[in-house]
Length: 431
Image (cartoon, rainbow, N blue to C red; front, side, top):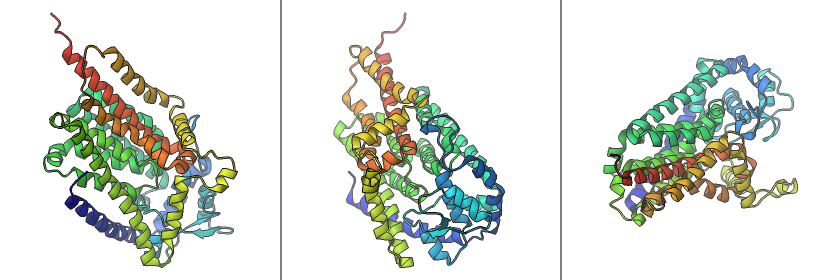
């Protein structure tokens, strides 16, 4: 894993991040929301036309999450009754906690709160509001969506060019396939989906630019913990495994020459250490919100959050009675079905086929050491482990959880590229 001293420092870092996150959310809620209300109201036509779950193409993979985006907008336009309470409880108007937030948004911003209740949503940080609210002070919500889309595209192009320059064209192609698996169009059109994407690609850009310092100075555990903290702060449990799977694979790609001097056990142990550091950052920061919200508001946030987490691990009796499948196998099948729908299956199955063909075709010409391939298989398995652990949440929200499969696409494609590269080095020269 990693040294106890590093673990202690990460825990201290998480505690400081909780304090910083609390301060940041209080700052956000202290900002006036008069202009925010006007700018969201000016773009209401967009949500009136699209509804809660619009799709720009057939299939769940193209579905947008206006449901959650409307929750964000209801929160930033909600009247502030005590900055600290609002920052910790994240109140909004709604019909019920799970019923058509877009409809509630339209009704509330038209000045009609009849039939609407105040709903609190304290189990997440809602850190995306730190970016969203200042943008909504400056311009209309439909313009903010375009700004987010432009930013997502710039991050992709920047990371792609850096992958090509530092790791070569083949790895750049593997990265592009992973991003296409996410369905970048849907990601860029939803605030909800953009959080994990933006944090992850920003982390990859930092790794590609500063790898030597991070690796030589043994700073990667802290870096992965920081990524976990940022994802927990900004995301509402969409596809967080993407934020550790791609950096983990990239860490190995950037340092595989140095790591070849180590044993397979050492390399895998190092990767598990990085994964653990991310997990401490992610779950520590997430649960920190429950604790600080309860301390500052006196509400029983902790029990509510823990109850909700348990519902993520298995489907509730009510949903079971309604006909939902509850086994891990069903959840995995549903995730793969969404990921394998339409053009997305090209990237998912192409990665598997490419790896299989490479293994069969070059089985005699090359002798790839297992330790060169095993480090790719660990991140490739992570999306399936996540679905197995959170089968209830994954089954219900397969239309965005499936994006974790982008990690599998990237890792397996890189493994295939490793085999092909080794095969070509062993080919006799052309005379």
